[in-house]
Structure formats: C-alpha cells, structure tokens
Amino acid sequence: MRERIEEAKKKGGVEEVILVAATKTVEPARIREAISCGIRDIGENRVQEARKKIEILGRENIRWYMIGHLQKNKVKYAIKMFDMIQSLDSLPLAEELERRLAKEGKKMPVLVEVNIGRESTKFGIFPEKLKEFIHALREYPHLECRGLMCIPPWSDNPQNTRPYFARMRELMEEIKKENFPHVKMEILSMGMSDDFEVAIEEGANMVRLGRIIFGERKEGK
Ligand SMILES: *Cc1c(COP(=O)(O)O)cnc(C)c1O
Image (cartoon, rainbow, N blue to C red; front, side):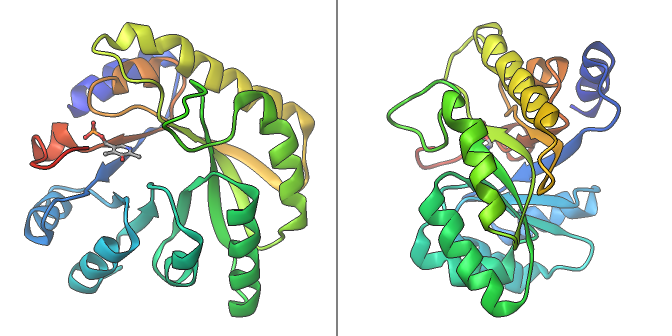
C-alpha cells in the first residue's frame, strides 16, 4: 500500500502524503499494532468511541483526528481530545467550537468538509457556498482553518470519482487566491481505501484509510 501511495505521489506531483488510519470499529489492540508499524495519525468518527481508545492508547507520538460528523453537544469533549477536526460542516458547529475553545483558551486546527457531490445524505458545505463559509470563519479566531476534506459520492470505479477530487483541488486553489488572513490552505484530505490513488493523483496530501489497513468492518459503514 505504501508503494502504491509512492507511485500516485509521482503522478500527482505531491511531495508528502499523510496517511491517516481510519479506525472506527477497530479495537485498541489492533490499532496498537498499526502504531507499532509506524502509523502516527488516527481518525475516529465518534467522540465516545475515540475517548475510550485515547484513554487506552494515549496521545504520545499520536495525532488524533475527528473525521466523522460532530454533534454540537459533543463539542466540549471533542476539543479536549482531538488534535484536529476534519469535519467542520456548518456555521452552528463553528460557533459552538469557538465558544468552547475561547472558554478553554485553546485553538483548534480544522478542515472544512465539502459536500462535493451535493448529496442529501452527506454532511458538508456545498461547493458554491464554500468561499462564503470560509470567509465567515474570520469571526471565529480560535478555529485555525488548514484546508479541506471530502467524502465524494460512492462508486465502484474510482475513475468516476476523479472529477470530484479534481474539483476539490480547484476549490482549494480558489480559496488560496483569496489570501484570507485567517486561513492556511495546506491540507487536502481526500481518498479512502477504494480510491486513494486517484485522490493523490489529483492532489490529495492526506488520505484516510480504513479497510485496506484493518480489513472489512463487521457492521455497516
Ligand atoms: C470510514 C472512513 C474512512 C475510511 O474508509 P475505508 O473505505 O475503510 O478506507 C475515511 N474517511 C471517513 C470520514 C470515514 O468515515
């Protein structure tokens, strides 16, 4: 898998790709194994599940990311646990994060989740609203916007997903051009087990991989 990432990096002209292990439903013992193989970046979808795992595995040498939809009533826990929230998907959530972070005197790196396929079943900001959304984040000084994240429409052929990844890169460039002083557009988090190579070819510098590392998950998702 690491070789496949290297190949794709050449095609995409990407220098560095951060591999985030997506560990929902994976038990701590198996995550520990992945850590012993060099994994340092871990993405979790649920606050409660992540909290148990962080208690067991600790934070030393590990960066914990929230990659699932974050409910407002979980924000107060999330800001104490995660090193970055990749799923900033609404202004009310930004507002709640800001309120809690300000109280704690803490800043939080975030990625804005883009609903790149405009799917009703998914969270995220619609592409045409993205610039306005990111501009609005200037009101929330405890959020450090570092880039974009997406989960494109599912397809069994990753080539069908390519245009969505390409559009994400364009959006990233468009936001960069705005030179918003409160924003650093550095991270493009896209690509999962079935399509990470195509994502990297289109400019992803962070991929989130679950099944290809840990095998098929038992329940759903
Ligand atoms: C589960 C998940 C992944 C990883 O998906 P795989 O297909 O198992 O690689 C990536 N990102 C998010 C947000 C996820 O929920």
